[in-house]
Length: 255
Picture 1 (cartoon, rainbow, N blue to C red):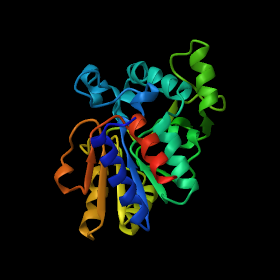
Picture 2: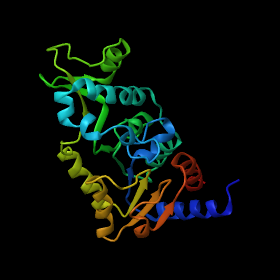
Picture 3: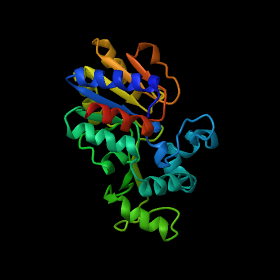
């Protein structure tokens, strides 16, 4: 049975969601770490503690040193391809199916929201699960790249023109996809409640999306293990694992 203080947080979160008309979800790495996806910015085991992002995850790195780029990206892709949604992803689908939430805006590139069954997902930083040829621009499904990596190819190549296949993610030195960014701003502007899940709110410009919600007087609820720069502005903060919290919340909402 949940402790009284946790039960109070669950009830307050359920009340916020029930009272809202247009709930938008904003997710970061923390929702996917229970699925085994590494956090980029974690203090202990974040990817950027082990790699210089400008040397391995930039547009320059892809085009000038592809071997170094794929030494970094290949294990991230394989983990993302094989990983499965956790309880937080699944419970967001349950909320969407019952009309509680309208859309998911995510900073993640792992595709776990779609694997879980979410229908309206805006991927601000693209997806690691599809590729495009850097020469002929052919779109390539992730399964083809998975097979190349599994066969021992360290760098994936296009079967049409032999160009190197580039993941459909936003690298350093690249801008966000403008249409997705525009849609995310529209969703934030419509929201009377935004649920921020598993995000440290450190990455610009993605972290400006919740600011849109605040500008028109709407509410924020934050569920993240650690504190964020926007905790003081939120109507409710829950500092606990997202995969542990969301089943409790959905159970309360669906009573």
